[in-house]
Length: 78
Image 1 (cartoon, rainbow, N blue to C red):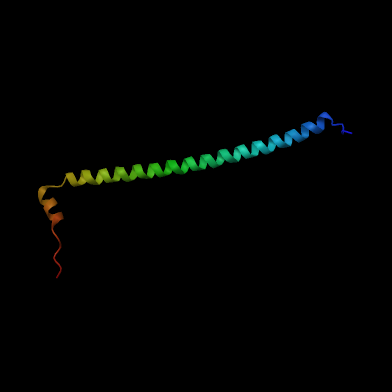
Image 2: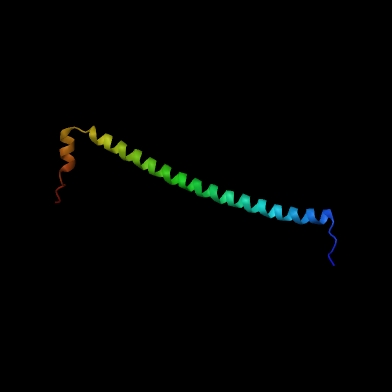
């Protein structure tokens, strides 16, 4: 013999399942967002390093020939 089920019982069970699904969905989205941010930060760090390297190269290009020769000389140890 099957048990009679009323509408409000079925709706409560389905609502519980929907709530669990929503909670999992939000957690998964949060996890993805955190990963994307860290990837963005890594890319920005690489970009900043590249910009700094370019700046240093530009500064070196601005040196006079005698300054460039001075940079190549090894210091004399006493």
